[in-house]
Length: 258
Image (cartoon, one colour):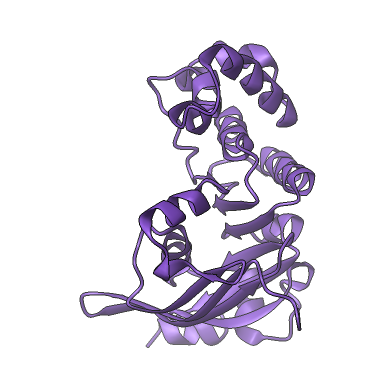
């Protein structure tokens, strides 16, 4: 990426909660149009990293740049304009139970008055088709959907406003292996169709290899490795390979026994 401004650049990002250090100098570049997967154990700082980029958690120090612009120095309106370009698929889909599927899909567009309610139904049907669902699903409530269908609707909502950055939080959690592979395929297709930059956090190594161009592992609040996602499990980095293979013995296991 030499000579090219990354879509997302993090430098020396730090965050503590009380006396607990969660981020301890995170450095990470995500190239425009690429899919980055962030790996790490529970409490390693994956979610806090993404929430910092999204502006949900203010870091204690460090820099966050998107398209070369300092996000932390932005005013409220500028930050809101940036957020309009971002989509998010939450871990448990996080659909609004009180709204039908079509309103869930077009929620952002409706809230910002970028679309009429009459047009929103047709728009929802268009986007649902992109994630393999019939337009009639739009009239159902989230409670009537299976877990896999809820994930698809969550993906449809994430892409409805045609964002150029999309975050995925554990996209295959709670799904069987086949449905997980289906969701991964839809994610890859949707990201490519939009030409978007994607950042995902996952514990699912098969999913990471399918959806990631590159991968990064965070451990004790720092990025300890980055490289091609296809090499996970055979990177030559003992810590990363142990995590990717799910092995009890290795440098991480030694730390856990201390």
